[in-house]
Length: 128
Image 1 (cartoon, rainbow, N blue to C red):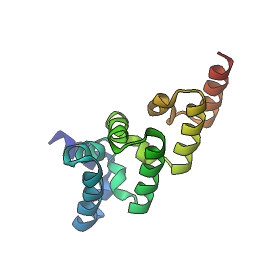
Image 2: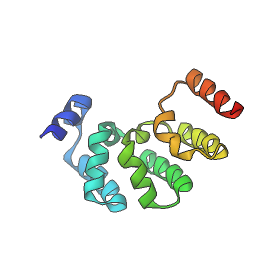
Image 3: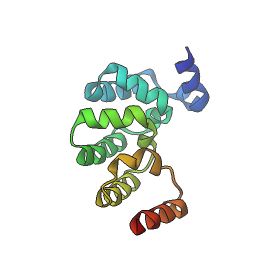
Image 4: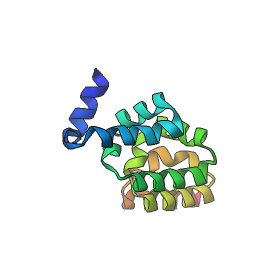
């Protein structure tokens, strides 16, 4: 019940969505990661149900390009499901830079940094 409460509090717009839309989003995530992981992703990032399928797919493709397999993407999303709330270009840009620093595993917490904090963090990492 806590999961349902969290979804409703964080994403009250969910009440306006058709059941078929919710079911479709769950199917997209379930086919790729399994039902339990899909539920965890939606609970961790309820806004994912508001996103179009193409939008979600684009982000999943970006993550797969960097992490290689659906299992690796699933592991990343289980730790940080809110990655799906960020723009695909932001994900791609930050992953490219992190890849160059050999720090792709840092995406879970660096994605939320403001541009100013990201730039400061990047300069610090580049100087080390």
